[in-house]
Length: 407
Image (cartoon, rainbow, N blue to C red; front, side, top):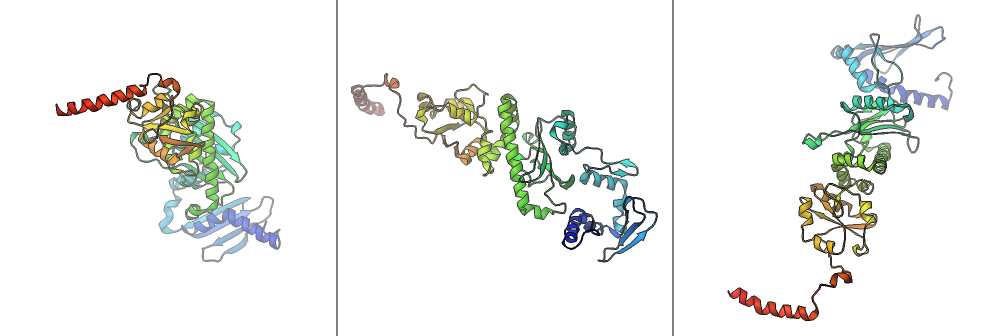
């Protein structure tokens, strides 16, 4: 390619070669004193040999008896010979090149046997393949609860495969989960459990993201501040939230099972993710005064039943339990006006409401802090005391109370 290109074309071709193969040449001299590369193009009569000790110079010569293809020989440094062991070679292959698109063999045995499922069209992948791949990347024995397999060309070239597990370990008091999504570029691992792909509250998601727009030699440091990574994260995060919203509409019962398991993560997202808290709020579910114990509703369902007396306010009450909330004095005015109240019994619920503040143009307001001086319908005044009766009652109380206090 370089030999047949001239002028600016040669420069561009050279940049492409460096971009594709530079990583290996940069790193090889960290472990090797000398590198020799034999190569012969298919159909060519003569091969070539490239040799360097990494001192900034190299030797290039013709070579006889070179098989078609490329052979690389490393003369390892004495202290780095451990990298020549079969265990080390296979470990590195499994970590970084398990999914490259061509077979890799070690001592005649193929080392990469797991297919890059995400690279296939989603219609070509069976549920059994998804189950096997999920178990491989998540180190889990169960099948995934949800599977999201998608690709996009704009604004970035992305192939992504996400799984939602059946459960998670944080609920048992285990340590905080690490991110579960790994980043690849052209099937080569860039970073396992990449922290920058999805927001922290989505750490329960497992999977793989592959982007051709990401250079192979990107460093961890450059990923921290990369505009490309921020754009990638934004696209992926919004797609995950949209997917969960779709699942809630598709099968509310299955979604409620998901929310029972992962609802704390969703609430964490409402508290911590400024950009996505509005969309994440659509995923929230709460108990309500108009539903039975254990029945959950969305904020949208609540809004659909709002009465005019609410004045565009969504009322909620935080309490240790449902029964405590229902017996609260703060509920009386809402009951009298037939206002539905969301019942929040989890510690994080109040923080979520405070951070959300508004939803769909409605103000979220605690019944404890609300000024419920709302006018009652005329029908509710039928049993009220008349003005004369009220005056008589006040007179009696003023005459009676001093007697009681002196007794």
